[in-house]
Length: 265
Image 1: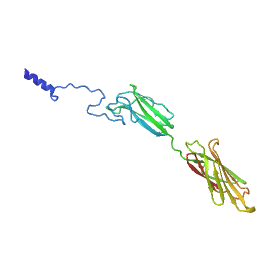
Image 2 (image 1 turned 30 degrees about the horizontal axis):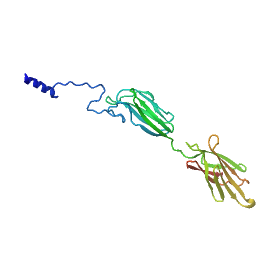
Image 3 (image 1 turned 60 degrees about the horizontal axis):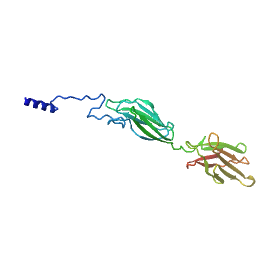
């Protein structure tokens, strides 16, 4: 009797021979020896509260980035941006995640788009009230530089003894004033530039056969529709060409562009 009892105890202690009472694994739970697959940077260890793949983003206006939110348990997410004028998120509102594999966390990709310069917080809240935040910093794109409309070359054609043209001055993202910084021309021509005016004066011939031709530039920063350079060419006699010259326009950030004025052939 004693021998039989000892044999039974030995059988229970030996996992290879005695009966086992297996503890059932919850549906969808990972096997003990198998690490759950990753969803982006969301790895189940387990994911006890909602997570996001990154907590900070630095974007330029117009750029987008995708962030993944995840939980080990099923939960809809409340997704919102606290400053849509700076950054938007899609989808937003109530978002339902998906489970890409039986042992993977539930996950939802979120696209964050930079709209304007500044800061915004994208928040993801799960059903338990846990909150994950993506702090977004958005900067404005660098200016494209100063441009002239319709072009950076102006050809003035005399009508009687004068000619006039208008050139728009533009710079994306810039709202300050423009000024003339330099003005230059070929020999026998005197040029000057200061603030909102620039001019080139050319002397042709001498005495009674001589004449003076002038190109005068005036910059109007308050012109309706945008800054404009008024180009005027004068020749008192009407038989001499105005001088060819260039004028450099600058902004308060140190950017410059050159406008060329040519007489008609």
